[in-house]
Length: 483
Ligand code: ADP
Image 1: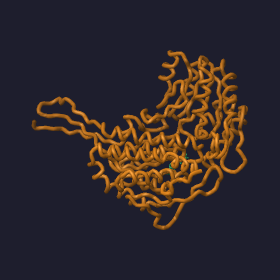
Image 2: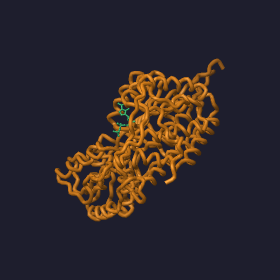
Image 3: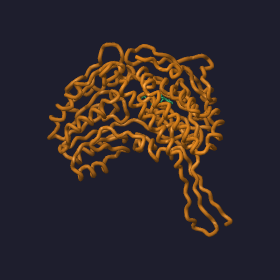
Image 4: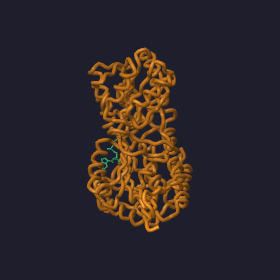
C-alpha cells in the first residue's frame, strides 16, 4: 500500500499556527483497535495550555471576523479542496486509529469535506433583516454577528466529519475554534489542522488540542472567552458540560446519544427494509448515534423479515478495516466489546434467542460478531441503553399505535426509521414520532444539506444545512432613531 503523505501524520497539537508539545512532555498513546497495538502518541495538554489556545483564538478573532464573507468562503473552499485531494491518505489515517473499513473511512472523509464545501457557500449568505417599526422616526435593523471563540469536543466514531461539521459553520460565521478530538482518534483531527494551515486559514483560527478530557473540558466550560461550546458524544458527558457552561451562560450545541427505533410495517417492501436495516445498524459496526437500536416488526412479516435480515448479516465479513472486502471492523475498545456482550447476555437471560452471531471474536483486536436477536422485549437492557455495537434486537408489534408508543418509549429522540408504502400511515407515523430526524423508507439520511440533531435527551441545536450556521451567530438589534 502507498505510504501516507508524511506531513499529514502529526503527533503534536496545533495552537496559534504552531505545532506544540505538552510543557511537561506528557503524551497519550493511541491504539489500533483491530490489533490492540500502539500506533502513536499525542501530547497530553493540561488546563493552562488549553487556556493559552483559547487566548490565541480570541486574539485571532477580530481579524477573522473582519474579513469579507467572500474571503472566508474562499479559504474554506481551499481547505475543502485539499481534503478531497488527500481523501485516500486521510481515510488510511482514520482506519488506522478508528478501525472502520477503508471504504467507509473514504466515505466519511468525503462526507466531512462536504460540510467545508457547504459552509464555504453559506458563509456568503448570512443575511440580517429589517423590520417595520411600530413608532415614527425609528427603524429596526437586525445584524447577525459571530458569537466568538468556540470550543468543540468531538467523538471517536466519526473522527473527521464531526470536526468539520462544527468547524466549518463556525469559521464561515466568523468564529475561531479550539477542537478537542477524542483521545482514541486524534490523528484525523490533527491531519485536518495541517490542511487548514496549508489552505491559508490564519494562525489561531483553527486549533486542535489533545489531552485528558476532563481537564480540557473544565477549561473550555469555565473560560469566559469561550462563548460557545459544541459537543458530540454521550448524553452523560453532555449533561455535565451543559451544567458547567451554565456558570458563564455559554451558547451550547449538544449532539448526544440515541436509541433509534426501526419500524417495519406489514405493507413494507421487505427487501428494501433489510437494505435499510443493514445500512443503519451495521455501518461503523453499529457505532453511530443514529444506528437503529430497536427493530419493531409487525407480526405478519416478522418471520420473513427476520430470515432475510439474518441472511444478509451472515454475509458480512469481519476483520481489519485494511483487509479487502471487510464490512465490519473492530469496536473502538475492550470496554465497548464488554458492554455489547453484557447486553446480549442480559437479553438471553430474559428470553431472547440468537439468530446469528452473539459472541466476541477471539482473535486479537476488539471484534464482536454481527448479531441478530429474536424475541426481544422491553424489559431488556438493550431496549433502553444505547448498544453502540453490531446487535439488532427484533421486537414484534401488532398495530400502528402500539409501534409508535414503543418507539417513543425512551428518553432519547435523535433518529427514527420506518418502512411502509401507505401514504396515510407514513404521514401519521412521521408526525407521531418524537425524534429530530425520521427516515422514511431509508436507513441513511445524513447530509450536509439537512439539519442533523435530536430532541429530548438527544441534544440541543442542529448541525449542517442553512440552520447549522445560526448556532454560531448572535442576533444584534439596532434601533436607529432620530430620523
Ligand atoms: P464515548 O463514551 O462514546 O467515548 P464520550 O461522551 O465519553 O463518549 O466522549 C465524547 C467526547 O467527549 C470525547 O472527545 C471525550 O474525550 C470527551 N469527554 C469525555 N468526558 C469528558 C468530560 N468530562 N469533559 C469534557 N469532555 C469529555
